Length: 103
Image (cartoon, rainbow, N blue to C red; front, side):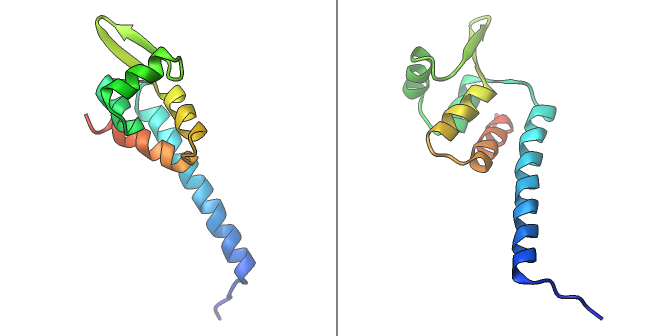
């Protein structure tokens, strides 16, 4: 005999699965990658051009540092910036992971 769950139980299970997927995506990015993105990766994650990225770093909205002459951008500050600009956590995580593996 098959047991059928009610709509509320099903909806709660879906919500829990989606939440776990979001956590899993973000944890993968932390475990599989470094904390810093290249300029090209940061632009990909933010969906912006070089001039906008430069503006964000000048205004201290995105944390950056230099390794030699190459600027590197902090994954966490990019994520915070995206979420502050109404990009939900799941989308922000996906953008960062996509950027990480795009280069």
